[in-house]
Length: 437
Image 1 (spheres, rainbow, N blue to C red):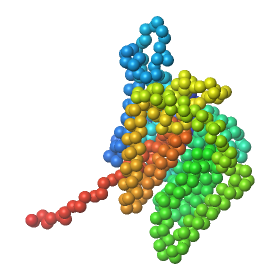
Image 2: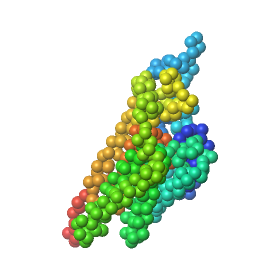
Image 3: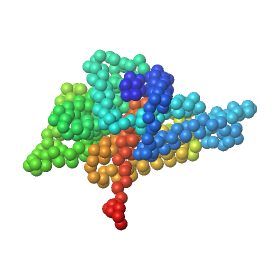
Image 4: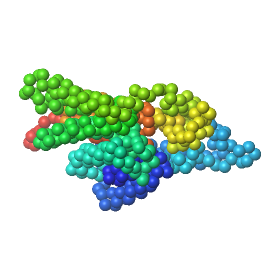
């Protein structure tokens, strides 16, 4: 599954060749796992399964044909009416083909959920290593692109010359690198016997991920990298303190300061050598010239126009063309709202907003609970899952990462890690009574 996503899972557009490969591969894996695998165990992942099921039901409902009078009563549908002609039965969504594609894309998280709920303890222990290897391999490919190798995947709609590795969008690549910055330190402390070689390797990988984020040219990625480094310090800070409990008190602050200086020094060198394109774009960008800010008033007016039912999942491009003002016309097209919260509000209306709010509330409540719980290996892994979801939530403010198959799958992994740490405290029990009483 990971290899399939690495090869062809980095595009969000429905017409990318990689979508066919990923979805066909997921169906094959899912069928094989159902026929030959063990029975999935949803004892601890039930909230994730419920949220995913609700995510499937919503576009499915949008594809149900409605009587003409019902459909015409929906806001915004008058633009599709032809005067003098009878209106046929039509689905809730204004773009049935795009909504069908959005529904079909959910085979990826479904397959990942089934695989993870079938997995034994050995697979679960190896999963962080597998994900870290996936991110490291993608980093090497990105560095090849940065060096001028000119590699572009035939399965993606990526832009030639842009450092995006296995993704069509450099922001999505930068997000995965930021995830690597929090996975690597946790992975290092998963095996204390191997910490002597895992620790330096994890530190080197984090530094490599940070420098590659700067090479992508992603402005949002630079901010995500800073957030990821801060969260990584929180994730493993206690464990580092525990390892240094016999050392003088100044050792831990000195170690943190040394890490900051090393990372900051390499970032400064990258900037001075004109290799930190993310920082360059962050400094040179002007908000008025950014298409995201220019299109925001139009997107907000579209959301109001289609409330409370929404326009249908996956159809932002054709719907935006209906409302696009002349001053936004250009040779390229505006493919998404570049704010997935607004995109969900437009696509799903109140139902989509409600589902999003429920998911975020669940993440927030469980996150508070696991950060207050005593630290164990399972709790640290759950905190890692919570942090990965946080990175996706922050990235979604300016982009649409969760619409790509790879990020969908990583979200399922993170959500299951989070859910498995949400265990109730054991209840006190009375001591066993002698059998002769």
